[in-house]
Length: 476
Image (tube, rainbow, N blue to C red; front, side, top):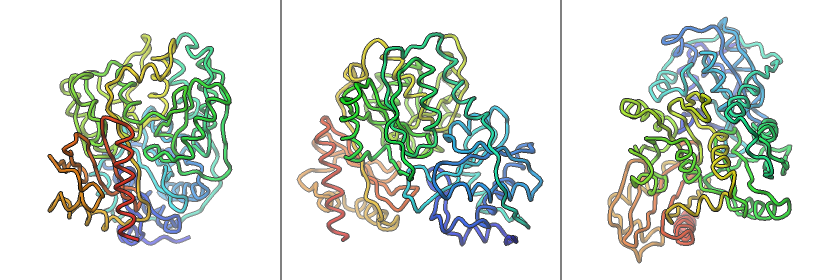
């Protein structure tokens, strides 16, 4: 199969674009030629800074992912580069193994975005690619001559290494006597998590494994999944339920009552357990985190793991134990630490397992709800409108920048007044009742995100529901 020589032109017309986490687009646009173009462009950019002869590959459970991986492997082969294929594994497992081996990596995943879409995440030997790397990939004029798609043989090294990374930290099975439900659905890590939690001593109950792909979004948990959690904890007498998004880098964990924890609260509890000195978090996270009560310093960033990671350089100049996390629950370990006198190497990419394990370790003699009850009562909520273009979302935000009261009227919040605004990422408005409403277009899909913060969960949920309902009624 011949491939167009100018990869920059092919990528530019492909419909595939970089968002907040990797290159995303419609499955139909991920042709073998386009996959090859991204691969050799990435390869060219990496070879300017690193020396290697092998690239690591892995996929999620989307039906389209395997063929995309075959095209990436064929492009590497065309360039004389070896590859190791790890099969279906969580993104952080791939990233961790590739960093240990000091080689680049490509993860084929669309994470939580709709079924008709997919994506590519790229890793340098030292971690996630930067925004500068993304631009270099887009501007590369590399070429690829011939693609021969072959069957990919699976190595188990990354899966085994990822499990060992966490089981090695605990001298005793601290989850003995605990019952943990694993909501498996189609998560890329579903074949690892049961072994992991059992090794830590838990009795594990597998829940709702599916043959079809389920695009779970940990920032917008459906009412159906909320109801399931409440049902499961009662039916199976569970101490917690653990799950992730599609590629296993964003956690979803419930307490013993079936209440799903917000990702930023989970991240906060994990950071406290790790005795972090400084944190980097997106501006959408709960404001109690940056209040000064928990850490020596908190850096607020734009939304997306590349922005959190970029803040680590600044924090590492002054602090030894640094972490980052997002409202979606993805946790990034910015510096190596010790737990129970055992080393845990830095992993500056989203990870779903570390925050869940540290939460359970923190409440090993108690319960998750008792741990969360100790935190200040400030609540966040978020949801999204799907199939709304980025242009439409940006136009709405622009109107709000010009006239905040007009926007609040449009959003159904006209009885409130704007006290201040923050434009770090989208438009974040502090209201005169102390609540916060925040709008931004998704960087991964045609969606408008709405975040709210208030002193009561009901009020935060009400704000989000009101805003999204008002927008939906006006654009339909």
